[in-house]
Image (tube, rainbow, N blue to C red; front, side, top):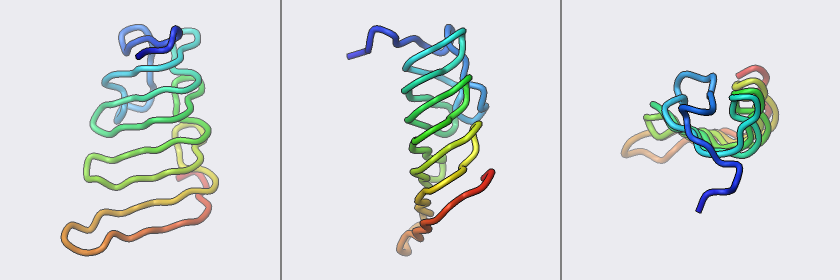
Length: 101
């Protein structure tokens, strides 16, 4: 079920090209703002500001790697956890603080 403020990509821009295919979520002045999910080559679910991931969110790359944590202007910035997929080996997990990716 969609929230009353939900819109789709043609009405609301996501400015990070890797996730700019479709968007479902809150919008302000034609850009993703608030809570939403954006899917392109990669996928992001979380908070947006002015069309970029900003605040707490989960980003999944096409190779299966996942980052869960804080974002600023579309870059990992702040506390987070990165899970790096290693195929048939155990995944690598890195926790810590990121600065501008």
